[in-house]
Length: 300
Ligand SMILES: C[S@@+](CC[C@H](N)C(=O)[O-])C[C@H]1O[C@@H](n2cnc3c(N)ncnc32)[C@H](O)[C@@H]1O
Image (cartoon, rainbow, N blue to C red; front, side, top):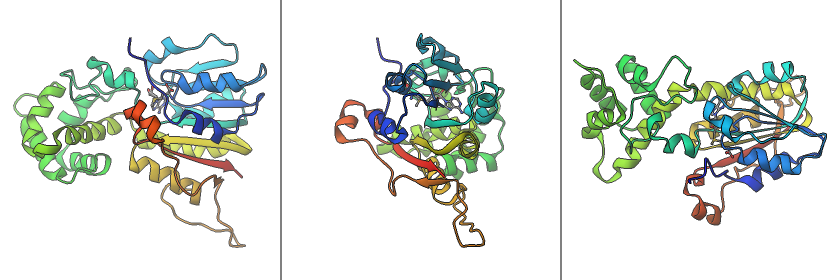
């Protein structure tokens, strides 16, 4: 059987968290629980780990361990849940962003263009907005914005126009119909890459991924104790830029604000100047880790 997910940058992210055996830690993106299990192995009997995942499927991976709890909601409510669970302040937070291999490989979820499936792409299947709504209901200007910003697609105008044309008179119902509708926009040699970018853009919009990351970054400064660690693995340049700028300047826009004494007003000190990337050995063993970028900050 295929594994649910192979954790990326596992040793590197554990090192970044500088785990204390009796500390309280948060895994914001539980998934297959690979990072969680490795953290639990390093915690002592008094340690505590609270994980988040908004996908019900992740529940099947929950370890039988009294030090562990899973919150089945978005990590955008980090502060609220940690306070409710009497877990403040925490010693470290890990987030391994994006989707799991399980989500991509589950044909019916609609995340992958290689399967023909209903246009869904929701991590949380109780969410109101699905890929169907984005593709069939968003106006052309909004589609252009999503395709160019979230998918970094250079011919976003042509693509959005093709989508809008194809959804009349009948809506676009499946991933297969979407691929067919946009095939005229696709460069022949890089067809798969292009489809992946389109699907990524729609997925980021459906799941409000950038908004959730923004909320996580802001709240992490409130929930970590001074000296606590924040470690984020991202797979997309937009997310990586947000994390980098937040750690360096205290906000995701990268605006440098200083106090009366000229000190930068930021909540974290970045642990490294450059993102940590997987070794060739890791990428050879797990192709899906190839775009992973780990950044870490220490709470001031
Ligand atoms: C890349 S996988 C994490 C894999 C995990 N580190 C492991 O070792 O198996 C990302 C997971 O985070 C979840 N996720 C993504 N965004 C989320 C959010 N805003 N709130 C809660 N879970 C989220 C996804 O449902 C998915 O299961």
